[in-house]
Image 1 (cartoon, rainbow, N blue to C red):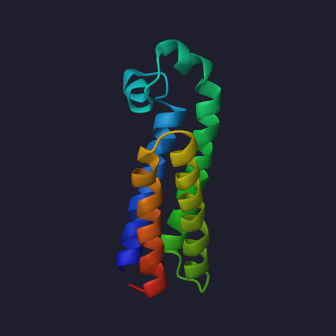
Image 2: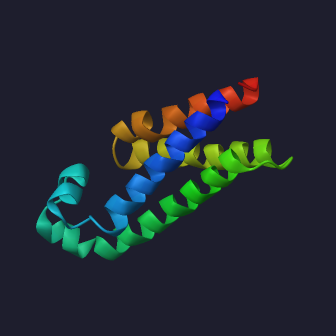
Length: 118
């Protein structure tokens, strides 16, 4: 139960990131979130939309894991949380340290709860 709640929270976080990257990238909110200037936001908009799409895939997989009633549920959770963890670690090294706290650590905590069966 706890793991499903954490997985859902992380899924909704990735839906929010999808919205920021795909639709709000060059708006004041998007530029503030990602510390972009209007010029940089315009130049990188299509790249951001691509990143947003990938975050959407992560969210879809996490929703599938959380809502699945099949014997695959645990495997799905491990796989998609693992993807989020790796993406969060890589992002914290290459883009912003705060990604470690926003993305990677929550995924690690959720992975631990899945492993413990709580």
